[in-house]
Picture 1 (cartoon, rainbow, N blue to C red):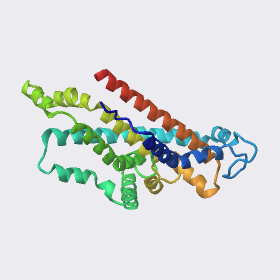
Picture 2: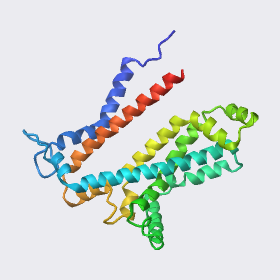
Picture 3: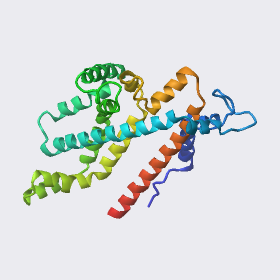
Picture 4: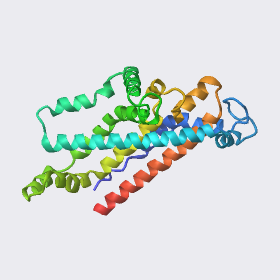
Amino acid sequence: MQSSRPGPVLLIIATAVALFLLMPLLAVVPVSFTPQRFLSMPTGTLSLRHYQALIDNPAWGQSVLLSLRIGILSSAIATVLATLFGLGIWMFQPRFSALLIGFVLLPLIVPPVVSAMTLYFLMTTLSAFNSYIGYDTWIGVALAHAVMITPFAVVLILVALFQVDRRIDLAARGLGANLTTRAFRIIIPNIKFGIATAALLSFVLSWEEIGVTLFITSVNAITLPRLMWMGLRDNIDPAIAAISVLLIIVTAVILALRIFIERRGTSETK
């Protein structure tokens, strides 16, 4: 039986490509230890002053907490909407399902600037009715992010659903299970990893979103990407390199945890 493992040449090529893609991320690590007041490579001495600045400046902590709050709410909204939409398409198979999917995926095609301007006018209009969900509010930002990230969640949910054997739904319906039971006790447990992946991707996309955020925020809802952008625009603060290193570490840990959970779930089902 022939082995399906890649040969040494392919491993070398894959490693070289991975290093090439990771070089911009790795370059920020030494910059974060510079003793200078501007972005530069350290020369001779290393310093933790910029990591200390993250602790001393409360704006960084506030922006992180705000981004977490917005990311959790927007990813929850996007995942729920994507799951309900996917279940409707998969279970009912409407005649115009392709048109419906294309309509939901429209934010992926529209230029980001157009989406940002549209959401800006929407948020300012909502502000006239409710000051808590409109322009420059964290709930308004979460709703705007949900609009932008739901298409990505829909794609992942549909991919997970199309891998489910439709006969289990037919069997449950033949045994008298109603729509709610089939959806929540038959289908959703079979796509739980797809839902978890959609939620994780939605959170990451909301966490790093900057284009729409610049249009719909001013001085109250300062997310972490917006604060980093302000630091780069105003004074090239090296603390940005420090927070970037921390974000890279957190992202790597989350991805490793996700892979571990996914493999553990796969091994348990075998």
